[in-house]
Image 1 (cartoon, one colour):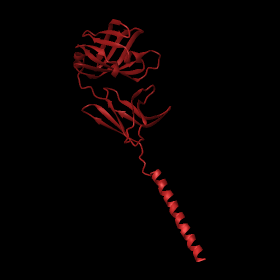
Image 2 (cartoon, rainbow, N blue to C red; image 1 turned 90 degrees about the vertical axis):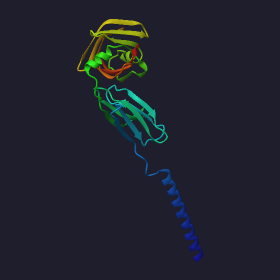
Image 3 (cartoon, helix red, strand yellow; image 1 turned 90 degrees about the horizontal axis):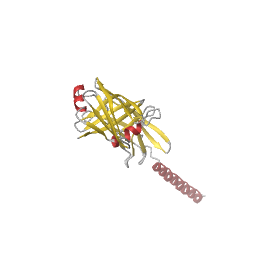
Image 4 (cartoon, rainbow, N blue to C red; image 1 turned 180 degrees about the horizontal axis):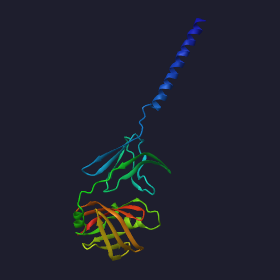
Length: 246
């Protein structure tokens, strides 16, 4: 009887040990200190840029940075790095606060991690300085860095006008505006006009599909060689990049 009792306790001890091993194995497979996704934004006043950092996600997670408005377009996208992080650099735009959201895209499903507001930049040049620099050169568009922020709701091909057509803007000192397209077709309209008030421009011209009004243009960047304009066309918003025609 004593031998049976001893054997019973040996078996019970081994059984408890096996259960403990399985329990430890499960705890290792499912750690309790799993990181939660986090999104942080920092501003650099000197460069007028915002850095948006994302952490706590699985490697190769597909991220998108999207304008958080009706018809808002994708500003940037990237896969999460092996360390679970990724970041986006966003230029601040003069006179325009950018409402953005960080989105996880999985197949056709999109989940918003966080919405952010990138403050508008302040125009540091006077209106006369802007006029002097705008009229100094003709400006050739750079389509690779031009983009759609908010798509127009009608069926007019303004996205193609901004991101495909190779064009030239020429601001004459007498408020005359000359518009030229060199690709994908050749077209020139010399009877346009432009105005500026409180450093905000309006352009009236004509493109191959008809009259075009570009409203509330803001100069987001201008140097002797580069120009960037934030432009409202219809109910869409576009950023058009240029280089000086030398």
